[in-house]
Length: 517
Image (cartoon, rainbow, N blue to C red):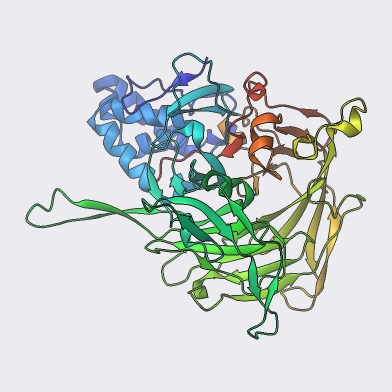
């Protein structure tokens, strides 16, 4: 049964991450100092008298549910939690959760509650979510900073922290540059028109019709247009004081930026804190974008904002770097070509459904392409021929390609090289785990110092279904979710999720929980 978490928690149930025999890395001088502090507390004081640095050290090692309970113990622990959550170190990715489909038959779970499976603990938690109802929201992006990009039943986009319940709206869908909103007599959006006209490559006034014009109901825009959202920089909470009562200040969110990949229009749009509308990042559009990642290396900061350079990849495997610091409407952002196309050995590589491509940054500037190979269900079961929009796909393997510069340090060309991901000294993953889907494509270190990572194992690919989506497919086709062991070639669903994956809506997604705001 999932464990329910709310804003009010009982006394903390803390594990002892310091004395665990599996954590040999902590058996050092700092450990001896910590143990002496614990001995001093046991001799003459209570748990509320633990030194501040020891409290923060313990808190940083706790799983998210225990972090939520931690502040409820006493005032000193509450103060320590406030400092730790606000520190940059607390923003590092923790053990991922799998956001499970909504089960309408589960007891005690309403439409406003979402269920999450913790891979490290092998335990599910039911967490209340802000309105609109979680059961009606589609996740189109998941950030390693703990934020989700959700689309509600009207296709309006929101940034949501599913653990803390923090939520802020993104610019209205009607402000997308390629969307015309058709309103009824009451001023509400009745439908969206997609004219799909784009400026010609030569910069002239002539326009090219890429796809036929289409009219979509408000709830269908999220299925047909929102391919994937990437949180370029996460929101930061700022408290402003107002007179005559400085204590009763107002809070505002600042510093965030979200990139949205839109299909079938093949456009990139961006929205930043304070923007009233979405702005085009690429103009004109001549590529079918499939994935994007944020460059977090040196030089990525711009005017106090971190992570402003984005690598975007098209369906052919060509990578372009976008300087989002220059993406101000109406002028397009500056871009540069990073790598040419890359094709895998699969004959279905050119088919977006049978070969999904992802872009991962292993280290600053070190790019890895992941080609996820899939088979259609009716190819394996000849007696079943579903309608095209309801075809099920099953992941069968991956191929990995690393970008190698021809000249060390830059600019002299290069090529994509197929690399080994099966394990051992030659593995490009080096014991790390890949997470693919609607989430930002990530390669995470397995947290051995935290007990071996629990369910998370190195040289494995953790994937969730990510399209092509339609309303019928989302609600009627079993999602493609599982763990692929590259060393042994085995496949299995995540432990503890088999029963929940019988439900299909909303599609599961990887979540990286965080309490940092």
